[in-house]
Image (tube, rainbow over all chains, first blue to last red; front, top):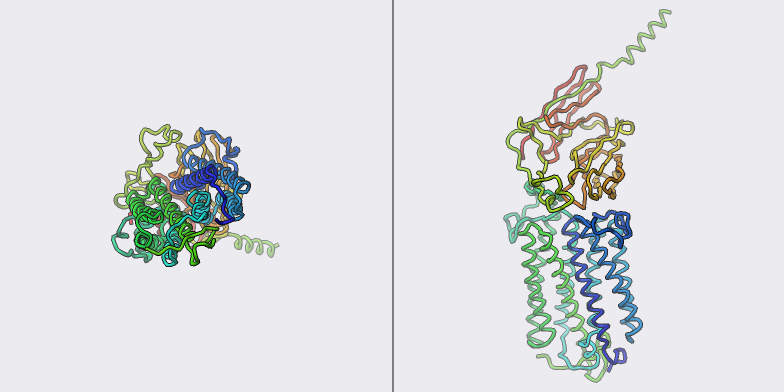
Length: 352
Length: 233
């Protein structure tokens, strides 16, 4: 058994880590609602709210866009508190040194996120909103990873429970797909923080074509057709191309995740936990494509667009968790040795 | 003495203008049927804003009266800069009433004060988003009954956007001009650019949705007419 793994699991620590990850997922959703409703600047001051201490801002004034931005800040404070408790708990209770430092990383990450969000408002910088959205995804992965590392599943792996070997080629395929999903989320965050509404108003075609015209006259005609009471900024050729890139990358991701699921099934068998995770991942992809189409068909309805954001976050973290477990089950040495990453001992078994 | 009067006459002739300042006046019309306005339906979902409305108000993109006369067109002298008297000009006032900016289209000089009032019983944030370097973006709290907010801009900019992020349908558009020679057409489509010095000018009429048109004039010592006709694109 690895000396770096705890002797027994700590179910309450695991549950608390899971709770923190869950609340963070809800916070990502609330942040999505802020952007979907164009409410990111509806509270001009930070860390106060309209001059009040943010925890004392009267509920009667939670109106319009303020409701989304203010509740986002309140929930972010809750995530900050939960993360702080988690970091302290890990430091005091987990014997694995690397886990303690993961807790510290989570603590620093939530502080950085809070500051980024505040500066985005006080400095009027939409570009900071893109960083804020991207860091949120990485922070969510970190919390889910901490939850995994405190789980019985992981501890059993570390204790030498036999599991199927995961080949390098399969790990590389899943890792590459996960990285591509992360790039897709950056593209999406960049699109959303243009605050220009839908750059392309139809799907699956784009302005009635497979590839839309983006010359100045065409873009001018698209803008002339757009009439909205919320007066989004005019769309540009760059934004149209960005949306097309988002659509193409989505298709590539779907095909790659399907390949990951197929390869996992073939190599690890239909009952392996990683196979189940890969199938869940594929189901998420279909849901995500449907939500993406629905976002366009509904003219970017805020709740639909936000659901698309949340499923995107789930898609990324699912790939990341698969990678962590898959890499944790990788080894090229005899089974009696303690090997693999993060102190996980894996058995060398024949690939199915 | 004769020499004195001679030079006095010369000096008088030198300081007399070739002609006196005159006004440029005109009427802006719209040809055809303007595009339909949209109902601002979200206003009815907000209990603070829906007070006073029995049905959703309409957007005001094309302010055309039954005679086809077009309001909210900014008429100015193209290329005339560096003549601003904004620092001493009276402030231009816009208000937030019924969760709408009133008026929504105004023009000010560089350095002239723009005062924003909040006559509503709910909070607004006043967020200006200039696109010209040198004009400062700001985002300010304005409580109901709160103090007026004052803005000035140093660079000319057409249709500088003011918005409320609490109520995402609220917009005002402020055109900043580096001279006093401009006018905004009224509900009858009429405009008057006052006290234009003699000379040749290009008069520019700009509508936020319909684009711009120009008309060359020469101002001597009588008022000059300049009419414009817009139509839907």
